[in-house]
Amino acid sequence: MVKKILIILLAFIGIYVAYFALRTADFYKAIYKNGQTTSPIVKEKTEYNILLLGYGGIGEDGKAHEGPYLTDSLMVAHVDIKKNTVSLTSLPRDLWVKLPTKSKAEFHSKINSLYQISLNPTNYPDVDMKKPGSPELLEVGIKTVTGLTIDNYVAIDFTGFEKAINSLGGVDVDVQKTFDDYEYPITGKEQELCGKEAEFEQVKKFMEPGFDEEEKKKLFAEKPELETFFKNISEDPKEAFPCRYEHLHFDKGVTHMDGALALKYVRSRHSLQDGSDFGRGARQQQFVQAVKNKLISVGMVTKVFSLMNEVKAHVETDISVDEMKKFMGEAGDATKYRFISIHMSDTDYLKSSYSDYGGYILIPRTGEDNWKEIQTMISNGILEITPTPTPLPTSKVKINT
View 1 (cartoon, rainbow, N blue to C red):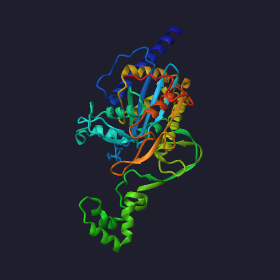
View 2 (tube, rainbow, N blue to C red; view 1 turned 90 degrees about the vertical axis):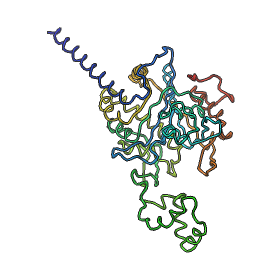
View 3 (cartoon, helix red, strand yellow; view 1 turned 45 degrees about the vertical axis):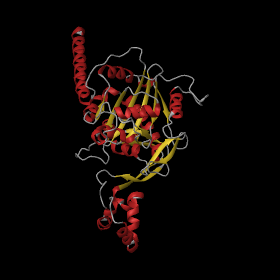
View 4 (tube, rainbow, N blue to C red; view 1 turned 60 degrees about the vertical axis):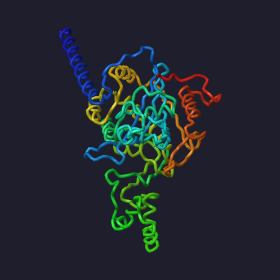
């Protein structure tokens, strides 16, 4: 009898393992974007630089978010399997990065636009892209800034993010400070005129090149309220089109967040108390740790099937099957990993500036294209050298080529 029960138990386990393998294979086939499913793994390799990127993408209704492939979130996770650490470096979206060109002419762009540029190579014929349609150009830009060579990437759109968090039953986040954001964009209302159709009709001609300057001066002299409206369109869009935005409020303390609320929490960047990309970067790192804690608390296996089903149409990666198995093995004991947060802002390593066309950008405080100090800071952060004892790190982070 005992033998019979054991045989039944083993058969059940075998069926479960086979089912798990089939489900994960289907999920992997859906998200893998590199053309090969296996790659040799060097056994002694213990450090990986994983690019984590989030973007708007296409919503469930088939409509694209505004700037659907501008990367709203950029982080590099330096995973050290030997030391059991994950160092998260947040990259502000306005970093001004020099791109390689075929003509060798200088060309810069904000780092959050590089993924979108790679998806539209015909619009940028001089930009030197080895793999158009992939995050390769973004990885080049990130290496320029951080000095780290990206091994793999994982990309998720807003819909996938919401579905993943909902599949986990939500996440408990310890909000560090109370804050309000009165300028959070409402999806689908990016072009709404909010009852200002008549005003917009009168000024829209002045938004395109070739308009009559005298006509513009005359109109604004006669109707100064239109001049104010016209100015607000570019300088204070919330004032010009208030219906495009909603008011967010978060209280300090532990807050349970579903997918929709979590997306707002990690995207918000117009708060007087916790605004800008720098506050947002810190919140995104904090949220990653909250997700890790939730996965540990519920047990990854209990949620993995529903999670895979929910997000497979919204995730892309180039992590091979072999590497995925290795990472999944580590994820089984995620409690042993420590998180290290690495930030940069305009109060330390960066300074605000403006591009030739007047757009707001961030450059190194030591000068445009001079990333050496920031690379040193990131390297020392990964090595947990605090404070930096010398202008240069005492040893180097392993950078894979």
